[in-house]
Image 1 (cartoon, rainbow, N blue to C red):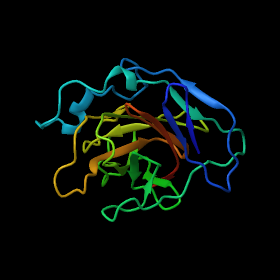
Image 2 (spheres, one colour; image 1 turned 120 degrees about the horizontal axis):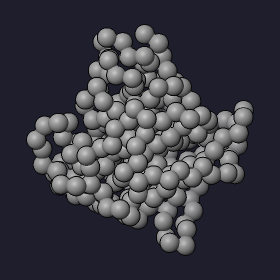
Image 3 (cartoon, rainbow, N blue to C red; image 1 turned 180 degrees about the horizontal axis):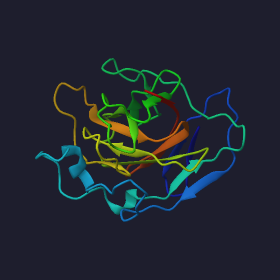
Length: 224
């Protein structure tokens, strides 16, 4: 379902046809200086380097991307309004989202399985957050910056993020503007991990300069 506000910002709600849509919206005020319990603030684009030296711009996304989180809410007994994944390119597995930025790595029913608490064989062992790999991809039509945050829709748990280092979870992902490298058919790619502590219905909010997209998914914890 697509809606355009008077400011031209696109909001995408991914609703499964068989699910009951929600009529209320949870608005959460967030900013670059906000701090979530046990989640660290990112250092802008530098998080993509995983603590090493890499070629990313200094700083982070512009202030206009720090819109309040505006996510659907669920009443007691309501179904998590996920949508089926779909193919957007032969290069990738099924993706979730209407774009221009989509998530790859969720199961076909938009389920994200994760191990909690993390076992000794997990890259997340020793942290308070389980997790699972999610690849973010950017359609060739958009070359601007990207901000990704998230929250639980049927509870109060948070969504964390990391990039290669499982010891720490952060409260957002920031991707710089730019074009894809040669050979990627114009698609940009950002490997990451989504960090969670409990099963439930969750949503990402993906913000760019010309869009704001909500991607709803269901997380299922497995025990080692």
